[in-house]
Image (cartoon, rainbow, N blue to C red; front, top):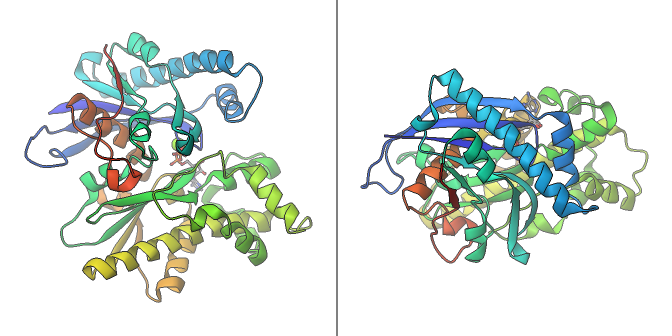
Length: 384
Ligand SMILES: Nc1ncnc2c1ncn2[C@@H]1O[C@H](COP(=O)(O)OP(=O)(O)O)[C@@H](O)[C@H]1O
Ligand SMILES: [Mg+2]
């Protein structure tokens, strides 16, 4: 058994999440042995650090200096959360073989050959006394892949089932889908919570729309929804990945402006953004199911939702309805909690698992997902 930790901070910039896993080490099975979630902790971002990280997502003055200084503050915050988590679990640094630290994505441009995660692994290793695995995406990008999503291989390791055909959808800031099949497929479907978060922040000063309650007070604006769904990203064939570089408030503002919809109410925009997330996910589930029906006559029997979006009741309901109207039949749409994995633990757990793969000298990417030339051992190791 090896104990590893994973630290994830996604596009939402809501919290620093840490998961501690116990992974049984076996050489026989392709995904390794049994994986047990030993602990999970989440600490909200300190607002000033969050804002500085957000500002780095766009071009700005003296970026290199700012990035270096902010990376160090970020690493200190991460180290603090790691040490707190160890204390609560009654563990010592020496009990953890490695921490996989994803880092904060500040630019994701695989077409230009890079995906940049702000991080300071040396600082984290120094402060925690634990070896750090970082920079998980660069190797996949160097091998011609998108460097994203990296979670599908972990989804396969914990959720694949011989008798049931399953899709997993992670609804974080961006949403990504995993189709558990042969080959394993997965890609970003588009915005998850990010645009809804940004819109409610602008109009009501809130970090997110609790349970989609504000969206529920508005109505879907069909022309806006159609205009959004016309974005080239939704038509692109996978592999594909996206981020704040594309789906931002300026993207939304430009569409509202272009369509001459200046008088649309903020609530209607929120309802339409929620529908965009649901509709774009449902469309991909149906597309992947059609592929599976063509190749192996399997229907999707269960859709598992993880990420913060799984807590948004209105979104879960809208997604269930969107699937029914596209598929002509209901499909169970349930949180991964139903299988013993609380929805917000999965991404951090994935980076713990990926760190375990790295230190074991095993590949972490799924080339059928990212489009890389082949399986690669991911990440850089900073020894304790
Ligand atoms: N109860 C809830 N109702 C609505 N949205 C929620 C709820 N809980 C979490 N979220 C959403 O989930 C987001 C965080 O999801 P997460 O999976 O951590 O994303 P990321 O990986 O981008 O950090 C929040 O920003 C918020 O939009
Ligand atoms: Mg998060």
